[in-house]
Image 1 (cartoon, rainbow, N blue to C red):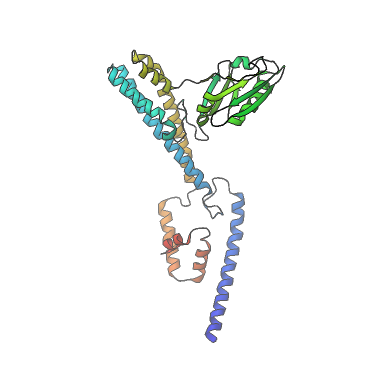
Image 2: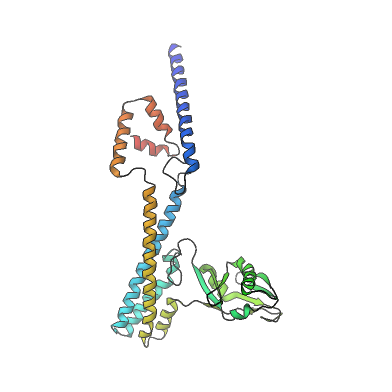
Length: 332
């Protein structure tokens, strides 16, 4: 009975001490969590992977884009050198087919981070920029109800009521409201001509199955007519034209030179992005260098080896959301 009573008192004291330490640790941590900014400091968090997931996504996007741009640059240079050295139609065609295959595999190889114009888009999905061949007539100041139809797997309808005396911006706003349900967005360029863009994954359906019905002013009434969409020129089209007609390959050199300039510029942008990511990683470092981390681990091990109950309780309280197996590996 005396042994059981002593054990009970020790257990109660340990429980109270542990509870007191946990309350003190919670009181100290609470202000730090409420004021932390993203990426938050490497302290105990209720969501310990919050910034790691976002950072990993950014790192993956940068690596995919850099890898694809580098491979494309090498293939463009190889084709350009073959044309300049007059290597012969067979060699030039082989290099062009290799580059064409690389451009065709762009969405998969780049993870959607590089668009048709070889420009990097880390924040969102790649877009296809296109124009309407009768786009200027679309912005005429005349009242009309336009009904757009997008076919494909299923047929969808959306309408836009264009104002009678509306400005080009007001007319384009009404059109954007109708086409926005399919991810299509239009804007006016420097020449006040409308241009549109859509998610690249939607481009195949939009380019083949988008039609419109009007009231007789811009488009005929009573029947849907296909909209004539024209995508912004891309290197892939130039390469396909060369493979189809291999004669005079030197006509492709200006397009290859422009592509190389774009690739160089985009790779510079990626280098700046890499620097920003490196700074973010450094800002999340708990220790200034590996030596200080090792010294802190040695000090912790020495204190735990002394068998102090208070030190062990504090170490276990600091565990927080760290998985128990990982804590045991560190302490062992």
